Image (cartoon, rainbow, N blue to C red; front, side):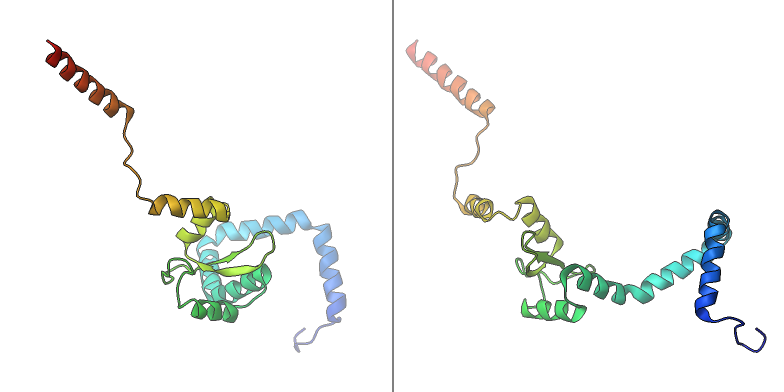
Length: 166
């Protein structure tokens, strides 16, 4: 109203608007889509600003919803790990570290960089596979010899034997 007051209470106004929307849903959605098409630049600028303004709040909400702790808990865990990945020690760059957790129990294990987190995923979080991989990398193994190299060596040795028997 002109004096800044409503002619009905908020609850009644809400019911009137809900009833109108239920009766005119298709037209209301079409109006919104038309406005969005006509005002793309304004809408994109608003959404960019909104995401930038809400980035910290969204991160905190994601951590609370997914892992049950806040950004403060994340920062505390990061400090306990020395400010970097729990495995390789690399400090977070532009992207934050991933919260690593046991998929069976949901227990938080630590914060990992993308590379270490993906590596654990590739090894299916199986300690036996990880131990075998560590043994493989640290073992002093013979270099891999190609079958073609073995065939070449056998031909060379056969040629030498043939030449000495003559």
